[in-house]
Image 1 (cartoon, helix red, strand yellow):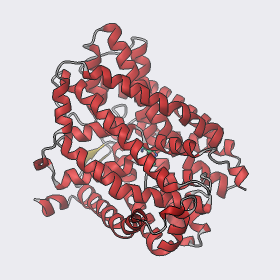
Image 2 (cartoon, rainbow, N blue to C red):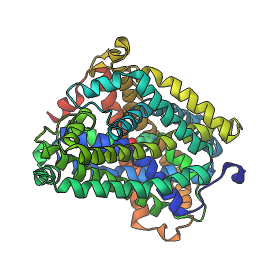
Image 3 (spheres, rainbow, N blue to C red):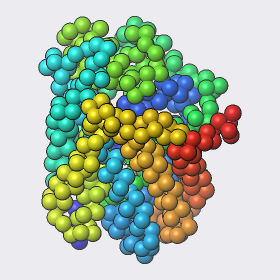
Image 4 (cartoon, helix red, strand yellow):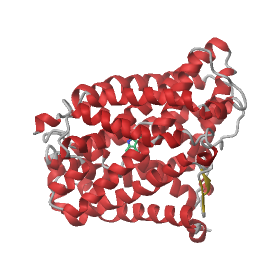
Length: 465
Ligand code: TRP
C-alpha cells in the first residue's frame, strides 16, 4: 500500500514541498496589497501573530491526521473511524477544485506577463492590465500551459515529481527574491517604502484589518482543505512533524515578509499609492519596471514575474495533489491517469473564471451580493472557496482533532519521531489552541464572512465601531 502511494524521500523534501504549497500568489501578490490596504505595518504585525498562534497548531493537526492514516482527506477521517466526518474531506476536495480553478487563471496572468515582458510584447499603459486579462484566448493558452505543467509534475508522483520540483523551485525562488530586494533598495525613496512597511501605526487596526489578517494568514499557510493532511500522509513515521510545521510556517512568513521589502520600495520609488488593491502587482509594477529603462526594465520585470510564476507553481501542484490523492486512494485509479482526469476537469471548471475578467459581460458582473456588492464569477468563487469554505474546514478540523479524535491520540501521533514533545509547553500550547483558540477564531471568520458578504450585516462595524 505505502509503496504504491509513494512518499517523501526526506524530511527536507517534505518541508520544501509543503513550504512550496504555502508560498504562492498569497505571499507575493495578495500579502503586499493587503498590507497596502490595511494600513501597513499594523497589518503585518497582526498577520505574524496569527500565523504562529492560530495557523501553526492547525498545521500540526492536519499533518498529524495525514501521517497517522497515510491517506487523502476523505479516506483519513474514515480510517480514523468517523465516517460522517469524511464530509470535511469532501469539503476540502471541493475547496481544492474551486481554488485551483481560478488560481490557475491568476498564475496564467503572471506567466503571461513574464513571457510578454521578456519578448518585448508587453504594452505598458493605463489600459494594459484590462486588455491583457480580457484576452481570453491568450490567457487561456497560458492557463493550459500552466495546468499541463502542474499535471506533469503531479503525475510523476510524490518523490519523483512534487519533491523534486520543490527542491529546485524553492531555492531558486529564494535567490530571485533576494536579488530583487537588493535591487529595489537602491531605488530613490526606497526607505519611505520600508518605513511604511515596518513602522506600525496601531490606530490603523480595525475589526476589518484583524479579519483580513486572519484570513490571509490561514490562506497563505494552505490550511483548511486538507492539503497538509495529504502532504502529511507521505511523511515518514520517524520524522518530527512539530518542528517540520514550524519550519514550514517560518518559510512562508519569511517569504511574505521579504516580498514586502521588494514591493514597497518599488511602489514608493514611483510615488504611487499603496492601496491599489488587487491591481497593485499587475497594474502598478509594470509602470515601475518600464521607468527603469529598456534593458534593465526587461530584466527586472521578467525576473519579478518569473518569481511570481514559480511561487504559484508549487502551490498549484499542491492544490492538484489533493483531489488526485483522493482518486488514487479511494477510487484506485493509477496516479498518472487520475492526475490528467482531475486536471482537465478543474481546467473546465475554471473557464467561467477565465472569461470573467472582462471577456464576457455576464460573468464579469456575475452577481450582486447584499453585502459584498458586484462580483465577477472569479471573485465569487474566491469568496466561496477561500473565504468561506477554508475557515469552515479549519474550524471543523480543529473541533475534530480536539473533541472527536481526542487529544491523547493527537498527542501520540505528534510524539512519533519527537519524544521530547511529550509534556512540553509547546504541546500544551498546541492542545490549548486546537481546543479553544482555533475553533473560536476560525468559527468567527466563517460567521463574519457569511454575515458581511452574503447578508450585508456589517457585524465588524457593529462590534468594533
Ligand atoms: N497558500 C497558497 C498561497 O498562498 C495557496 C494554496 C495552495 C492554498 N494550496 C492551498 C490555499 C491549499 C489553501 C489551501 O498562494
